[in-house]
Length: 143
Image 1 (cartoon, rainbow, N blue to C red):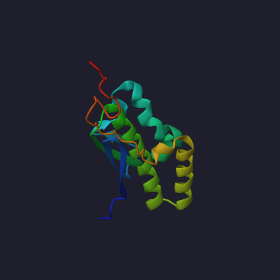
Image 2: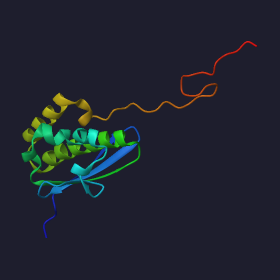
Image 3: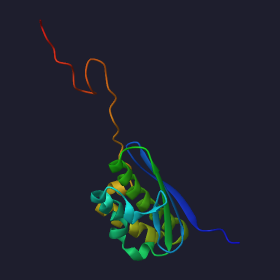
């Protein structure tokens, strides 16, 4: 039996991690076992669709992508999902299609939003003593 053509990539945002497993198929994209159309919250659903909308449905027609996502809040998870989808199609094209098609996809995605392929390094700053948060201090009183 021939080995299935597949790639595995990660998309990250803050503490959310999305692991995408892309293989030959018929154009399904599932997130934690659910179709991508059912992603909640509804207002961020379009964000998760962005890579598909930018590159066109035809690029995803013979590709199944299964995504597992955990950690972070719902917004960070959506951003991790969109990053994982974009990285998975670029990795799949690099491995099984040709280099020029991969470079074309990569250029299109980078022109739209660099964070689709390059992770955002910003993280939460740790809280310090003497205040409520990372930078805010308790009010000073003289008497």
